[in-house]
Length: 150
Image (cartoon, rainbow, N blue to C red; front, side):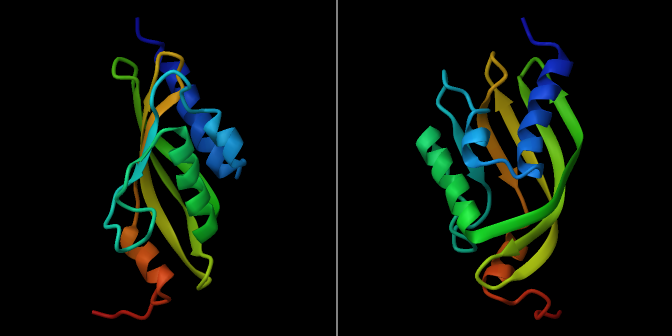
């Protein structure tokens, strides 16, 4: 039997709030399933940023993803809205926005991104998918934000 929509929404909000409140990696990892193989993927060309385009499978690899992100980027003013909840598929899609900074260049950009979260029967995250502005991340990485004109 599918969980009520409200419980699934609550689990998704807890996961998203862990980022908005800048919780530590262990707190975030505690929201992932311990009974299923978990994964994280941020879509994009791997040539643009080292965390793009590869699936991090297994809890230790998901931890590496978060450590990699934390070593390259900082963020502020993260908030989430427009949750789309499917209690039958145990899936939630959500829109986020915030300001990101590439640490080595200090370049910042405002970004809108989406998460798709798949959950297990215990409402723990099994699959974490991210679609974000990989072009802005690349330009921030190489110090070219605001310098390219068309």
